[in-house]
Length: 222
Image (cartoon, rainbow, N blue to C red):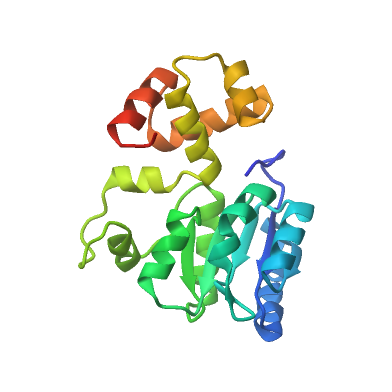
């Protein structure tokens, strides 16, 4: 997510197939003041993809169950086409399913039963580049039965978007190719590649492409 002005409101797209829930979420966003603004809404997988690509919001609040279908099946494409971060807002308590959503690129999960303040806090954290996961879900992500202390490296790697994971893999396979060549392989502009690399460096705690290569090979990110 990029914001041209630091004081620009966070543009949010809401995706839910229940009109009452959508109405409530719209009112919550409207009541949050100048920090948040509603970019638009969608109600199923197809409209989510269409509106995400058209609106290019900063954040998408996404329900996992849309008209009887799981939105997980379109999550990678939604992330790619919209360029947005995704926060899951779901009534589903299946930890394996929620963990799968995070592995596919969602940046956080909030229960539909959570207070409004929790959702607003999650929106703020995700838009600030952080993850919003409870201990039990982090345990599921790490394959643990108990909510043990989270592995910081797993958190760092989990914070990468699918697009960023692809860039890391390309860097590893490039054998020191110049940014211009990398950008051509990824079908993106060179300035976009530089911006993405800066984000990746910050998330993984590395300083340059050499350190990124070492980190990626050590942690199996090829």
